[in-house]
Amino acid sequence: MKESVLDILIYLFENYFDAELELAPEPDRDTLKEELERAGFSEREVGRALEWLEGLSADPERAGALSGIEQAHTRSIRVFDAREQVRLDSDCRGYILYLENIGIVNGAQRELVIDRLLALDARHIDIEQVKWVVLMVLFSQPGQENALLRMEDLVFDGRAEAVH
Image (tube, rainbow, N blue to C red; front, side, top):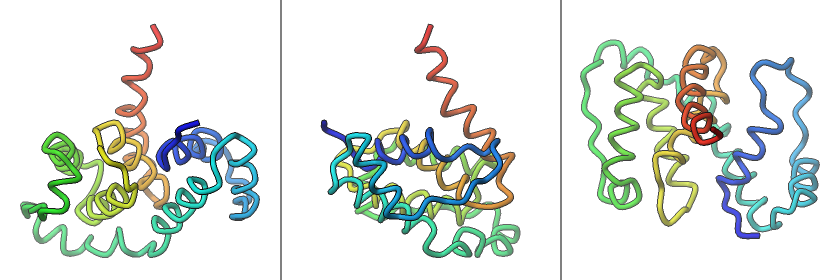
């Protein structure tokens, strides 16, 4: 089975993280690792996915750190460095900035999204991957229920059309 870190993250999101359910105790790393390997994911990719999740939650204050600065500088411009431009094509960069402009993510969350996208270590990053990473970033932060619901609409809207 050829899977990626994002495939595992999506599997986890769809099977373990449900914002509408009462939060059950989070499974520990070893339990998650065993369950993912039983589901058919390789040990190497499971380890990488769990590291990615640890990077997401490593500094919970990081995404909220700029909130005061954000209010003072709401018209700031994000300049992507050469490494980011190589990994994130113009469509992805534009979509990230679009999400910020419509208020789904703030500047600090945008930076966390970019960091986590680059941490995927994927050869090609597309808008669908951006959507999922944004969804996971928002889910990981308390008080983001409205933004999370708006993002879920963007993520799952395209899937509903494909089912028909």
